[in-house]
Amino acid sequence: MSAPTTGSVLIANVRPYGEGEPVDVLVVDGRIAEIGATGAAPDDAERIDGGGAILLPGFVDLHTHLREPGREDTETIRTGSAAAALGGYTAVFAMANTDPVADNSTITDNVWRTGRDIGLVDVHPVGAVTVGLAGKQLAEMGMMAAGAAGVRMFSDDGKCVDDPLLMRRALEYAKSLDVLVAQHAEEPRLTVGAIAHEGPTAARLGLTGWPRAAEESIVIRDALLARDAGTRVHICHASTEGTVELLRWARQQGIAISAEVTPHHLLLDDSRLATYDPVNKVNPPLRETRDTEALRQALADGVIDCVATDHAPHAAQEKACEFAQARPGMLGLQTALPIVVETMVTPGLLDWRGVARVMSERPAQIVGLTDQGRPIDVGEPGNLAIVDPDTSWVVRADHLASLSRNTPYEAMRMPATVTATVLRGVVTALGGEVLR
Image (cartoon, rainbow, N blue to C red; front, side):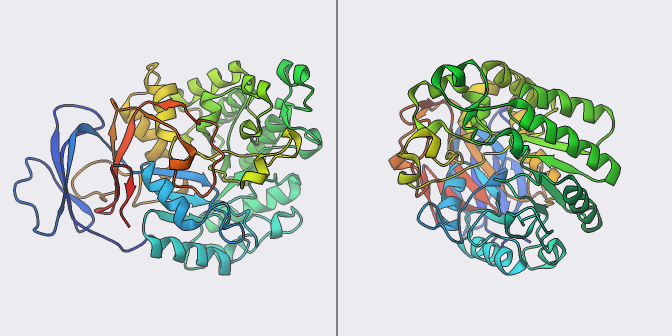
């Protein structure tokens, strides 16, 4: 149930998936009409010169925190949508840990309508699995799925559905509704007071450790529950080497399990904590280099399905405090593609078709979107991103579209630039500016 906005645009001089010689791509009434020598375009068509850049399907983010309703001081659906469009995204899934929690159709429908009215990206609300994220009672998943928003993914992200019986019931309920449950894999009894990855760095810095087993024990438990329920489960922000091996084992058993990895877990490790800067505090925590390497390889191999930003804006005072008291989370929407280039394309782990797979096609398939993550072909929806692989840029928090400034990449030079984003034939971002 996406916004009805459609338009016409002639995208000249681009290389779909970075392959072959540049061509022109004409989008008419929201769909790709011609590829190649397009000839005459409609009089009202906007024209973009891609300059030989790469054309990809618009990106899909399964894990975004837009904070509205309740924390509009840190992000709004409008500012988060702007950040997404500038990052090449045409669809995002807004997590349920808002205030009030998105555990009913009144809230999820309002989030969807607001995103539709803004029209920069398709905003799909994620419904809570349990009432108030309290882990005690299942939310009305059926009503949210049947509402105007057509909610198709449910998660208590930020908290784990740690009760195995409740999680089993949620998976059974999800099967009957043909929707997806996404799990924040964290056994809370193993992370009491934990603020950093349990390892040599945390021990040296005097930070309470967060063991890999806290994640991995839930991953294997939920894989088994999904097996017995005969349904799917999705693992949010996989972060450990062990999780990769458990996912590989589950796939070998025929269990319907999918998983995402964040850009920051692909790029950063716990050596960043040496400065005690709370901007590096995330949930799950930054792990060791061996975990980072395993995650990269798993993404390349398809053991981990996709990249999801876990874009988590926070107010300045929530980060400008001692490490233990800081809120976990980082901005991610505008830096995701360059980090994937840095960690996956540059070392040869993925080509540009691989980037399309992990940032667009697989996330859309996981949640059953039929109008996103589609091939660049005649007749397909005109949801597209133009990427200049040769132009780098320097991250400045003050120049990002988010209301918050908690980026760990301040002053870091990023490879590759998203130069334009097109949503159903309407240009939403161009040359670093939002157009709507």
